[in-house]
Amino acid sequence: MSRPVLFARLLTASAAALLLAACTTMSPGPSGTGPAEPPPPASNTPDETNQPAAGFENVKPGSEEDFILNVGRRTFFAADSAALDGTARATLDNQAAWLAANPKWLVKLQGFADDSGGDAAQVSLSQKRADAVMAYLASKGVGSDRMWAKGYGRDREVRSCKEKSCKVQNRRVVTNLRTVRDN
Image 1 (spheres, rainbow, N blue to C red):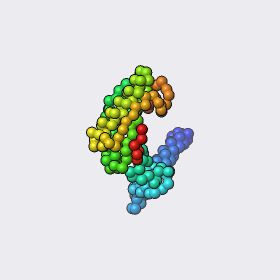
Image 2 (cartoon, rainbow, N blue to C red; image 1 turned 180 degrees about the vertical axis):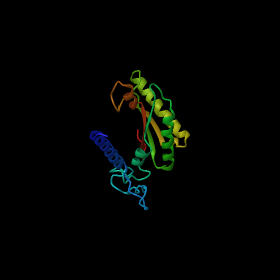
Image 3 (cartoon, rainbow, N blue to C red; image 1 turned 135 degrees about the vertical axis):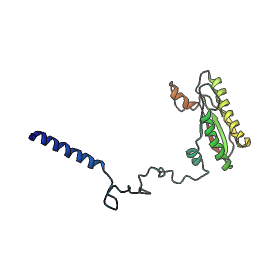
Image 4 (cartoon, rainbow, N blue to C red; image 1 turned 90 degrees about the vertical axis):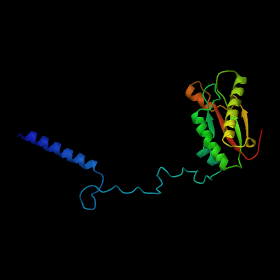
């Protein structure tokens, strides 16, 4: 065998050994043969992904912050519709359960629209959306004396835009917690 061929084979074998060694990250087991179990993950380290987000460590159960962060206060609708889809019903089921556990809160349901039609049609549609949410929450046991609904039409847009994916953000009912009834 020629010297260059022998050198090439030796170089290839060395490179393969180095690659194999780089892939082995575990230390040998107790007997010195075979890999050991990986070490247990460190707990309570500052960079752990399940640690509370800064500023939210002290959110009290039953608080408005708890409702916003852990339940969600927005219910979204399809274009030109006040019908509740499965996602909307799931959101409202969570809201109803939370409200049942926290009876001190009153609920103002604010409807919004960004659909086809003039301003009067938008106010009417947004009111229908707020009423649909109120009826659903009532059907799940939230007292009607704790809720009121108002449609605002195109007022208070989240975003002013033409794209369908953007406009859907404006087709919503926002469930706002109150301690006293307002207008």
